[in-house]
Each structure stands twice: as structure tokens, then as C-alpha cells.
Length: 75
Image (cartoon, rainbow, N blue to C red; front, side, top):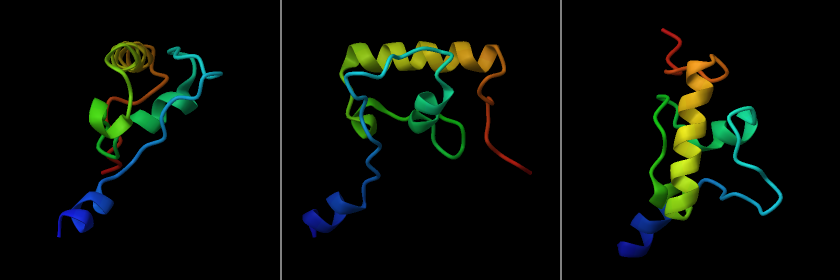
């Protein structure tokens, strides 16, 4: 039962070494945002704490500059 529960967890791809964390790189930042528009946890992203902090600040900057939406709800 424990193995079944583990396979259900959503795994987002982690950052490759050639990818730069930047607020202008919206295609990278969209991978770390859920369907509801929330920043995914470090556990789900498989990131280091330093990478997670820089992803969070980049997402917040992109939201302020209207590159990324605050919420992805269409309704």
C-alpha cells in the first residue's frame, strides 16, 4: 500500500544545470506552479532549499510584472 501511495505523488522535473532561474524565464517558472497558481513545495519540485528560494522570488517577481498570472482559474 505504501508503494502505491508513493507512485501517485506528482513529480515535477527538477532544474537542469544549463537552466538559469530568472523571472524572465516563464517557461521554466510555469513548471513549479500548480494548476491553482500556487508555488509547489520543495519536496514536490525536488529542489535544494537555495533553488526553491530563488524559484519563489522569481515567480513572485514575474507575477508582479504580469509575466505570470497570480491565479490560473479561468472562471
